[in-house]
Length: 129
Length: 129
Length: 129
Length: 129
Image 1 (cartoon, rainbow over the protein chains, first blue to last red):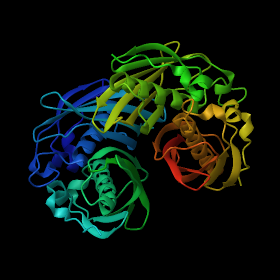
Image 2: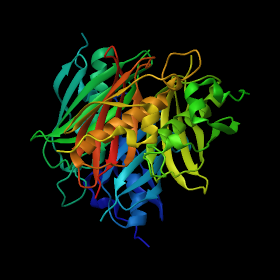
Image 3: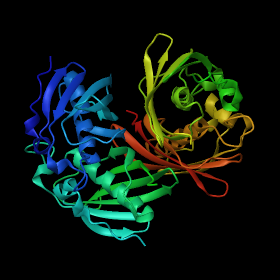
Image 4: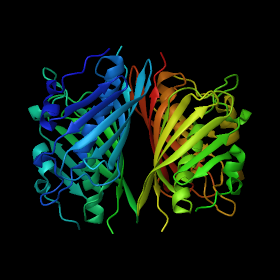
């Protein structure tokens, strides 16, 4: 059983201030509390897409960490922004799709606090030796 | 001729602190000075992938803004992290691949200060009405 | 209620010889019987990746046709080949993720006859006017 | 120097009937002559997207074969269909972006006989051991 990693060991994750919701074999759920610095534009209440992309990358990575026990460099990632993510916390669920000898694959969804799906991601990560 | 947009109108872009290098029809080049908050892990000198992804999204968007004159919501984006991006500034060049009535396509590359290619991106953006 | 489209109106779909399994609002399931022409290499029993990619594109498209009632040009598509697809029929399930005014998003999975997941796809398609 | 591979060892490549134009270190250029079976729909003169996706996958793979000397399984691929590809031959150029110990990256463009860019691709391939 892999121990739940400490999110605060990463300077960028401390800036984002992501929190654990669940960490189970093949699944990682994270909560991102809102910060003013996440906004796309002054006077807008939409998140910048880059914040959502980072959250997706992180949730996919930890979903795989739960199975391989170690950090995995992201090789490539696709993000689809489906709807505007507005001021308020976001929830990201990463799920392991494949754990291979060379690479792993994860699928990620991001919802707002009303449960609306705002973005999805799919990525390839390098399996640690 | 589209005016070079002000990067500081966006709270997240102010956090990233991206700067203009070039803004020409079909091309946007941005410089990202290094910040400690961009690091992947304490004691590492690698950027967090989420920062590079945000830079790619922004450079692709502005490459298209140079042709359509208005902000374009990103529909989807692929990022390939090719090599570790280490402590130091990054340069991102976004290039317009297609400007369509419904969607646009941009291609982006990110280099470190030695000129080494560290990441590439390709994205679909919604053409403003 | 959208009528189940005739797969045989397309020369390439006739070559592939895809068959309907299910056509429901937001879901399209297709069966691809095996053909020798689908093999990757003489003496191998693996499908060529390009056949699997085409099946994914088609299943995603019809999942959205079930909701918008008309063919949608694919804008972009990501395919992840997770495991070798071997000689034998393949089953593809496309699911609608989002139907928007400008673009739609679909998610697709491909399984072999033992139910093993061999590939996944995610694509952006243009909503017909 | 890697020998130019024989395209006819693959049943699916024989169906597509792809031909060599160039095979150089880091670059593979292929020509796809038109066939009626490639059409998207009866009465249309557009290629089916799945044919273009296969051509992209093949050109990216051979661009990397030119450097690693052996076939590379495709891990994942993004395809952007930019404009309709109409009846007539297609030219695909694959270029190596990165050759790594674990994975390689290739970039691909497809043009019609007038030189118009009709699609682009970017993929991750597994480096042979």
